[in-house]
Image 1 (cartoon, rainbow, N blue to C red):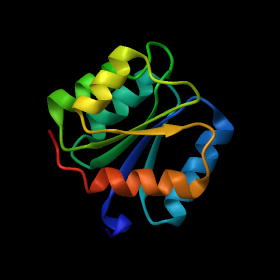
Image 2 (image 1 turned 180 degrees about the vertical axis):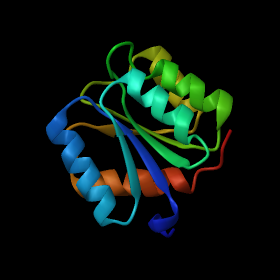
Image 3 (image 1 turned 45 degrees about the vertical axis):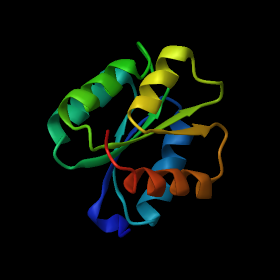
Length: 128
């Protein structure tokens, strides 16, 4: 996969982790859009929905977690790859939605190569 043709939405509220993820993904050639909370993530998705290929979401992103974002992706662009990141196990509803979207779980803390692998793997998933 050629990352230069793919845009990633990163929704994360920890500034040091945002900087790391943005740097790693941009160095790999991805276009990166960053949102610091769930509201900003929904706005970014609405504005750039046709360009976003992958969403890397903090499962517990404020204010309500990632469920609303996952629902919007599923309703409007189900082909978008999803990576959910969390330091904890995913709760039942979030886990069920992630699996229904054929998403990938990324346990925090993660190494840069694990982030890249998850993003790459999300690109080869078949929607549905």
